[in-house]
Image (cartoon, rainbow, N blue to C red; front, top):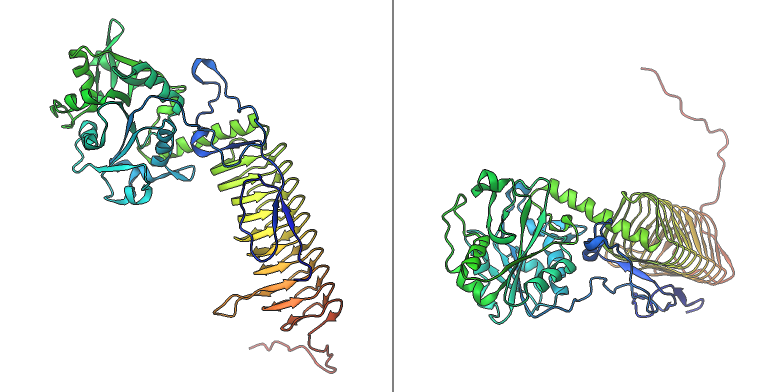
Amino acid sequence: MPGKQGIDFPAHPKSLIVVKSNITVQPVIRYRFSITIAEACQVATGQRHGKQQYHPPKSQGPAKPHDRILHHINSPAMNIVILAAGMGKRMQSALPKVLHPLAGKPLLSHVIDTARALSPSRLCIIYGHGGETVPQRLAAPDLAFARQEPQLGTGHAVMQALPVLDDGVPTLVLYGDVPLTGAGSLKRLLDSAGSDKLGILTVELPDPAGYGRIVRRDGQITRIVEQKDASESERAINEINTGIMVVPTALLKQWLATLSNDNAQGEYYLTDIVARAVADGVPVVSAQPDAAWETLGVNSKAQLAELERLFQRNLANALLEQGVTLADPARIDVRGTLACGRDVSIDVGCVFEGTVELGDNVRIGAHCVIRDARIAAGAEIKPFCHIEDAAVGALSQVGPYARLRPGTELAEGVHIGNFVEVKNSQIAAHSKANHLAYVGDTTVGQRVNIGAGTITCNYDGVNKHRTVIEDDAFIGSDTQLVAPVRVGKGATLGAGTTLTADAPEGRLTVSRARQMTIHGWKRPIKHKQ
C-alpha cells in the first residue's frame, strides 16, 4: 500500500507482538531485569535468612522479560501435596478460598508456582469445597487432583493423595492458602530432613495464639499440640507449627493409618504423626523460613488484604533496588509481570496487569492502568491512561486521559492526546491525534495529523471495516471517515467533512453544507404564563 512503513518497537529480540495489516514490527532493545508475582515475596525488607539482603542477578547479556526469577532449584526427588480443600467460612464467599486472587492470581496458583520451582516428581492438589471448580480452573498436565469429601482434617486430606505418591521419595506438604512461602525456605527444610527424617517448618511469633505449638524436650521436637488441645504451659510456647512439613512417604502411609480423631475438633490431624515419628525413633528436625511473613495464611478478606499490601510492598522494594523510581512505594499494584529498563519512573496509583514491559527512560504518570503492553524507550504515558494489549513506540506521548485498546501499535514519536481512543490500529512514526478522537480499525501512515473530534466510522451495524490514511495526510477537525475508505498521501480533509469515498492524494476534499445567514430571523422569546 502507498505510505506503508515499518515500525520499530523496543522489545527483547525473542519477544513477540501481534502485527496486523502490512506494518512490520522490528524488535530492537533489551530489558535488564523483570519481576513476577511469585518471586516478589522472596524479596524481604532486610529480613532475609542470615541477615542477607536481596540483590538482582548479575546480567548475562540482555535479560529476557518473560524469564522468571523463581528459578528451578536443585533438590532431591520428592512428592508435593498441596492441601486446598477447605471451605474458608470467614471469607464469606461462594468462591473457594484458594481461588481468591492475590496480586491478580489465585492464592493456590502462587503455591503451585513455588512447588514447581522445586521440580517434584509428583504434584497433587487436594480439593473439596466448591466441587470441581478448583481442578477446572487450574488443570495442567503436571497436576494430579484428589477430592476430599467429607473434609475431616489435614491428616485425612493427605490420605486422599496416597494412591499417587511415590513411596521411594519424601513427601512435602504445602497449603493452598499460604501463598508467600519461598522456594529457598522450602529447600532449607528439605535439606534438613533429607530422605529419612521428618522435617517441620517452624517460626517463632511474639503472639502465637491460634497456632499449633512445637513441644520440645531437651531441644528435640517431641510433638505438636493444637491451640484448642494445649495446656496453659504449652500455650506459652512461642515456636509454632506452620503446617508445612516433609515426611518419608513410606512412613507417612504407616503413620496416617494410625491417626485418631479423639480431639477437640473431631478431626484427623496431620501433626499427630510427629508423636508417631518420635515413638518409632525417627528424627524430627526443623527449619526456619527466610522471613516470618512467608508463613502467613489467609482466612478472611482482611487477611487477604494484608497479604496483598505485604506482597506489593516487597515488590516495590525490589523495583527500587532495580533502579526504578517510584513516587510512592506504597501506591503501586503489579498483578502480573513487570519488566523495566533503566531510569524508569512510575507515579502514584498505577496498576500493571498481565505482562508489561517498560523500556529505558519510560515515564508513567499517576493513576494509569496498563495491561499486557509494551512501552518503548523514552515514551511518556501521562496520567489517567488505560492501555490494554497495545505497543507504544519510542519517544511517543500518550494522554492524559487516553485509551489504547487491544491491537493498537504506535510507532516512534506518535502523540495520542487527551480523550483519544485508539483500537486495533497501527499508527506510523510522528503522527498525532491530540484531542477528542476515535481511531478504530485504521492504518495510519507517517506524519499524519488527526484533528479534534475525528471519528473513524468502522462499524456498519454488522461488520467492521478498515480505514487507511496514508503519509502526510491532514484530517481536519470534526471529520467522520466512513469505512472502508482511503485517504491518499498528502491529502487534506476540511473540517466537518463526512468522507464516504476515497480522498485523492495531495488534494483538498471537503463535504459540508454551504453556510447561510438568514436575514430577518429573530430568536424566540419565552412567553410568561
